[in-house]
Amino acid sequence: MKITVVGTGYVGLVTGTCFADTGNMVTCIDTDEKKIERLKKGDIPFYEPGLSELVIRNQQEGRLVFTTGFTDEIKQSSVAFICVGTPSRKDGSANLDFVFQVARDIAHLNDSIIIAVKSTVPVGTAAELKSLMHQLGKDRIRIVSNPEFLREGCAVEDCMKPDRVVFGTDSYDTLKVFHDLYQSFVRTGNPIMSMDNVSAEMTKYVSNCILAARIALINEMSLLCEKVGADITQVRQAAGADHRIGTQYLFPSIGFGGSCFPKDLRAMASLFRDYEMRANVLEATILANELQKKNFCRKIKNYYAEIDMSIAHKKIAIWGASFKARTDDVRESPALDVIDFLIKEEAKVVIYDPKANSNITALYGSQVKCVDDPYEALDGAFGLCVLTEWNQFRHPDFDMMASKLSKKVIFDGRNLYSPAKMKELGFAYHSIGRV
Ligand code: NAD
Image 1 (spheres, protein in one colour):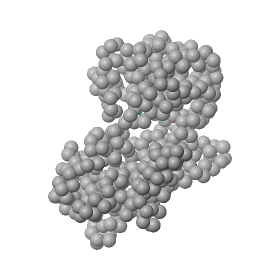
Image 2: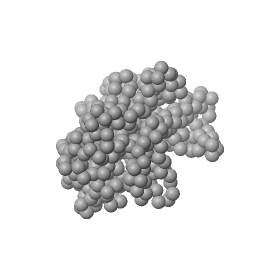
Image 3: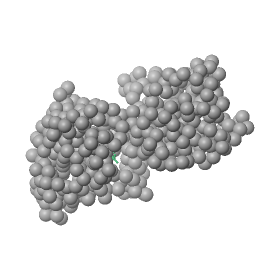
Image 4: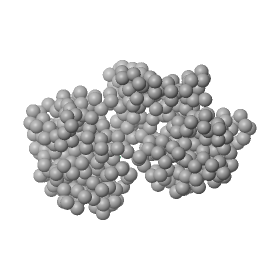
């Protein structure tokens, strides 16, 4: 099948590449010329495990091409996937300008294509796109809502072997096209779930809201654990052993972040307001997450206040800045809140992240220093904040850490170490929900 994918970010590039890898002819379009130039050379503009090899192979085998403009390829495409960003507006609602612009551009060149919306868009967007097509006199174009559930860090695996494929449509002939397209990704029998557009749009937000609420809830429980002297790790493991609860998305931390959860929760809360309803649990989740990040910063502040030390002009090290491990994405990373706090306290912030250093430098410039070695970050530092759960931080050389740090204190926002072991090693150790 000939496919066009518009937007070559984390979703579009992975989607386009995986479709190419199953034999489809895929054209990927992005307005970012630098990105497309890099992609043409087989250079992936962001870090995603396993993606580079796939892009290069499919490009070499002629199934994957990159371009900046809407070219004739779109005229031959059966399906165009919209994978552009849908950032938050000031009021929290999703900005759909890119989505509508792209839909217009596609409709201009092909009046019988299927437009599949993979970007996360508010409920009702498919209906609006349908009415736009009607206004443009393009009633033969069909709109499919095809939300994406991949996770950065394992996006290729998630795309190739999704738990489920969801798509919404009101047109019978698109059902077969989508079943055919996705068949090779669900060979183990995972379901392809077709439904109406509104339900498909709703499914994406509901999934993210539930996952984010779980994290916020376990984080809230961790606060009480610290007060009563319980260990949140034992508590979450025991609670999660109940099959009704399960173990996923129950890891206490400095809070959730990334380009999806915060943005999607805001968009969903905004949608509730549109219907003059209040999203009580959702609003509480958003607030609890903000407080969780603040609590972590307060923990740092209180520690130094208690030992009567100012961190102004003193070096503080950070390990991990991406919003989670296995990605270089720092969008709404909770680490940014900690970095902002430390900058405000006038500390000299030195950061090591295995993949996100360049994104952090792009954001903060000379306000922080990024280094290429985790132990170099510790040289003469008066404390270490561990903010991303990269595997390489799980078993560090504690002796080396002790010898490099000017003050043996660790603020662990990901609970990577055992409090008992840290005590034994002589570190002052502050983690989440454990004393
Ligand atoms: P991204 O910012 O990484 O990529 C978006 C790309 O679209 C950029 O490369 C940008 O240059 C391009 N673009 C913008 N306007 C364009 C236009 N008019 N024509 C062509 N290209 C254009 O975003 P992303 O993380 O891939 O997310 C895309 C959408 O998918 C969002 O709605 C997001 O909420 C959703 N989503 C993201 C994830 C994720 O993990 N990142 C998962 C599921 C869903």
